[in-house]
Structure formats: C-alpha cells, structure tokens
Image (cartoon, rainbow, N blue to C red):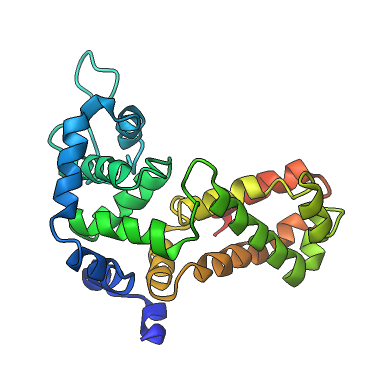
Length: 262
C-alpha cells in the first residue's frame, strides 16, 4: 500500500484515504455524537470562548485565493463577509468545537490552514476528527499548546539530523556542534524560526499544492517522520544557495523563501 500512496492518491479518493489511514475514522466510530455535543457547547459559550475572536479573524486569512474560501467585501465593511460561504462556516464550527474539546490547545494559529485543507477533501465532522487525530496521535504532544514543547522538541530533532547528515551545511549556519548549541540554549541556528512554521502548518503555503498533497498522502499513512524527510530534502535543495553565504541573516532569508525555488 505504501508504494501506491507514495505515487499519489487519486483526488477523488484522497479524503477517504486520509480519514481511514490516519485513524480518524476509527476515532469517529467510537465517538458518535461527540462532535455535535461539543459544537453545541461552543455555540452556547459564544463570545465567552477566549479563542472566538482570534478564530474569527483567522477565517479571513485562510486560503483567500481559493475559490471555495473566497469572500466579498460589501460597502462600508472593513472585513470581508463570510456569510453564505459554506466552507468558512464549517471551518468556524470545527475550530470552535475543537477549542472546547481540547482545552490544552484551544486554538493555535496555523490550525485554520490545516482544517481548511481538510475541508476541501472531507466532510465537516470527518475534518474535526482528523484534526483531533493529528494533534493527539500523529504529532508529538504539546506541538500546538501554549508551551509549544512538542514543537521545540521537533526542531531540536531536525537540527540534530541536519548536523549529523549535512555537517557542511550545519557548519555554514552554526560554529558550534549541535550538542553545544543545545546545551547553551542560545546558539541554535535562527532558521528554526522558519522550520517550526513548516511543521506547524504541515508545509501548507511552503510547498506547491500538488506537492503538498503528495506529502500529506504520506503523512497520514506513514506518520510524522515524513515531515523530517521533507524538511531535510528542502535543505538539500537549497544547499547550493546556502553554502556560499557566511551571514546567518542571509541564510535565514534564503530558507524563508525557499518555496520560490521549488
């Protein structure tokens, strides 16, 4: 199966395959009616939900170029109206319900893009349980919570892999070994500010859409290890641009806009 997944899942089957192999389908089957219950709680809480305002603001920033997410600005309005945009209404409901279901996370910017992408391929309740599965089962604990401990751990692992497998590239970005940088807590390459964004968004708006979908195919079947493989591949692809540079700011800028070179 892995061989066929890596070749790319047909678009009309993609949502069903993601939903099944991620484990979200089994989670929904064992929690029938739970989504509706938390949706009702979110509706009852309304503006008293501490995440309601930021979720509402992020709705307008989610795939504005995609025809399904496109909104219109009426005369006298400062923000585009999300009225009569079904996918945005579904996005709002999923994010609000999740903020109640998983209070340790609540809401973290970038989840709007993750859910938005899911909603392009699956139904609303399926997207909710797939989000739950991503946060609670596929990714390390604490990736999206306030401490972002899981995200920091991922970045340490990525930097260790970079140091081990591309020592020449590491040497361009840092004059200490990985272990020395990890120990002092301040010498880690600044590119982790970029790579953490890669992982939080699961490479949305980093990779071309068709490439991204192929990565997600592997992500839902093989797990979070695929994120490290893709990140290392991006570093390898940027090697010829980074190696001649000696300034950490210049390197940061190259890695930050690497998607333009793909």
